Length: 449
Image (cartoon, rainbow, N blue to C red; front, top):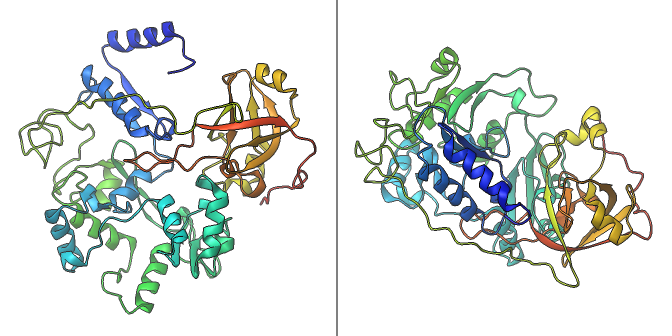
């Protein structure tokens, strides 16, 4: 942990080790590295070694980047996963889900590719058409200059979204979808608690719910089978069957039970099961070990993982001597599609800033609010400086929520963790200098409503 004093690390270990209970929770930051999985495994090792799991007031959790990040994966939105956390390459898992869907197992696809590899495939000519849903990679993915070129290289691009975001402006056709408040369904929280979202208003104008758009596309392609739902409840009931008998078992969860219990935690394997608010307790439901133990291995035992330090993909050098790290600010959300349109939120943080330590700023001759250029081997941005003492003297921070010439992802590196495929947003080498002049967009205002 460079930059953290040894005595502070020892103090944290003492606090953790002597506490009777403790809970380790982190957000996406430690995953945004080319060795992010190693970071997470190290955190899990700490929890296991201290016995802080499977009992009250203890545990481990990762805070997902959006409200239903976990629930989406459990519906099968990951390119290598079936509903209920079943494995797309496991023959038994494929057979179970294929039966629910009414298709042959060999009709199910093989694992797909991660979001960034998708654009590499466009570059190689392996993908010529794309349909995306609420996807804004022109802001959210690293090396966004490359992403923009690949969007324009497609023969055909269709986007489903509730606003015309930065990426959708490259589309041949945009189908107006719906906000969460304009539909109903479920959201799964980080502890596996399934809650219900009730529709508040109808989608405006020609907009409609995303699931209806998908069904219309399937019908237009002559493949309506499997896309003939009349309501979100029917879609959820299919998930219940598809997830039955495995780790993220929704089969015993109903809309009525969710309302009655104010949420139900999976696994919930039967109608009379109350749900599992705490994983890995002795005697808890475990379809993998089948009574041998609480952990999801055949013998029911947890596994420690060997963790080895690995440096960032790109280190600083004489040409690019400063570390860039990126992230979020509290008043903006993800790629800013929604929050950059809301005046009071924009007022809190009107534009991205280069947050820089006073010592580094003094060495580079940069004053607060000076226009400052951050450049890497991939691109550059010019933004105003914000001098803060809360950052390391060898590092600058820029939030990523903005697009176009304000997008810091024009600068970031497309290195990825070899397992999770998450990009290394948290480290790349840059050159920082006071800009000779203000950029062309200096007086632009964000759209607000």
